[in-house]
Length: 151
Image 1 (spheres, rainbow, N blue to C red):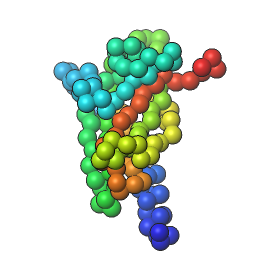
Image 2: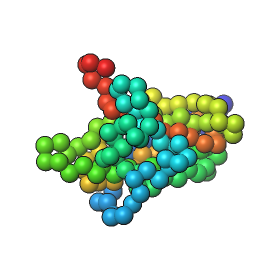
Image 3: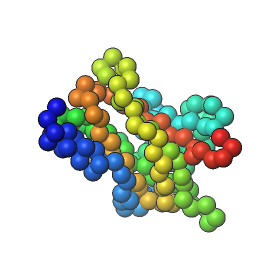
Image 4: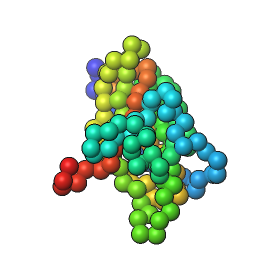
């Protein structure tokens, strides 16, 4: 791979890994739009998987999600989350997020490291991730409670 191409890929990843707060939430959005497709999976510290067990599902809502191919043919995932918790004592919601990219057969191609995110109360946070492989066709997003000294 040419050094310039590699540099462009690294620059695109650096620009896409991040979150940016957006406008406050609009009423009436769905709790987890992709739950039927199992694209967003909530994890708990005790090992239970799924939204019926994870407390993050009650507060962390998916406002919008989509995937597309960018100009260089790499698979890009964009998800907008909203923290629906309005408690006075704990307004921010902290969690870790990992994106797993899958090929056309549903086999894991690559995955990101666990990235910590802070979701301010009542704000939309956009998460963008780009696959390094042009063979990526689908994705899964794992959301877990942050680790602490006991976990």
